[in-house]
Image: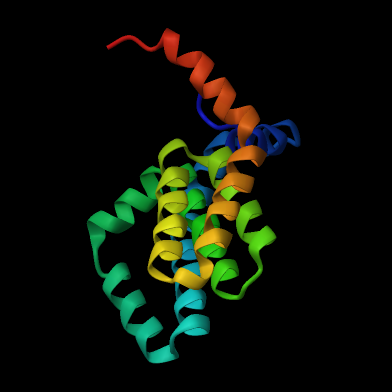
Length: 160
């Protein structure tokens, strides 16, 4: 039921002979750094360098946030894809925005819906992008249909 992208990537690396322990330690070390770089780049490109600097200082000073990033690597990768999607939206590159949102669905169950919601709300706030934001959300959901169908059909196997 869990989205397959990260796990398929891990499986390929393990088939190539990379140690499971190395992969765990590598992704725990790299994923927070990639997240902070993606966030810094997004803020710097869409706002300014000074704001980006202070946001990164604030985010990197929270140890519990850092632990959350390393303990939930697929969610962190989903957040990175979501940040890329928002960056593409603000640059007017709507199809690549939808593509990155679809990658969110293939990486993490919850983060993807958070970013779909964010894109639609941004379209509501920014009236000029309302129709575009709905189209982006629809295209992303259509691209993610295989994983979404698998998740919906697997709900019957979840027991409380």
